[in-house]
Length: 166
Image 1 (cartoon, rainbow, N blue to C red):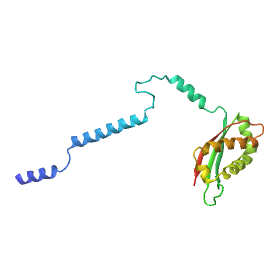
Image 2: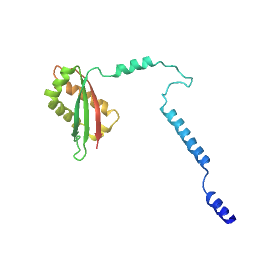
Image 3: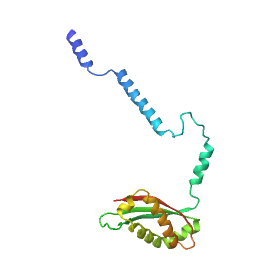
């Protein structure tokens, strides 16, 4: 009997006890929760705790929401200037004034729109497309060029939904 007791103690003494293991797990979860809270908190100014009401934030976000109708332009694959083995995948949203204009773009003008987008994107080299601010300059140029293709339709903005250089 004494030998059995000794062997049980030898076998059971090798692992960490359950309360210690649970304490470690809970401690790790608390630390992760604290880090997550710290990383996701809004970055205000001072640590003094500014009080911001939700109403101005809602007003600012409402001003950013597009007020026109967005016409999607599906994926276009284009070879950039000076490259035969690389390509650019781009998908856009064109914000127009109202639903009547959006329907006209979808039904009558989509092919000229897609052609002009491909022409503009293919006029850029890979280096130009990868430069800082390239998307913004491309957006401005596309807006100018597409305004010529859309007679009588006010193009409010151009949005990128996909922009991949491969």
